[in-house]
Image: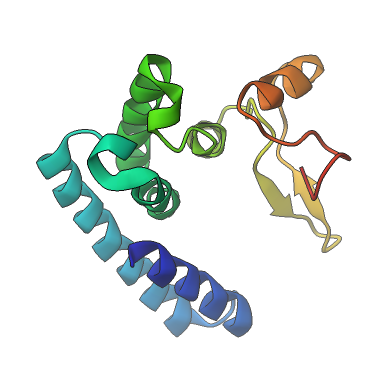
Length: 154
């Protein structure tokens, strides 16, 4: 339910445009409420592993966390990585690169997996800078992500 609410907010924002302050404020307030619910859930379950909330639950928690504050993103990233290294199939591991890149960009670092984009002054989508781009394909494939040109936007 949180994931579908999150995506409905993203669609509303996209339809309204960035200049609609009311929609931006509503989405920000909803993101904050969902982040609070994620924190409450993590207090109960301790680990967002599929064994605790199902793989769909793990994916939903990841999705909602992407639109939260940096502290929560880093906590969830740590929990996802811990579970991934113990038992890869017990977590929505494909979300790790996205959350890793997002937190790195927020902190002022280059991304590792090339998952984050921005719209430039030319109204085109551009990938944020990547650290060691010669290793990008290898890093992406290690998490089962597409490589640019092989599927979608990549």
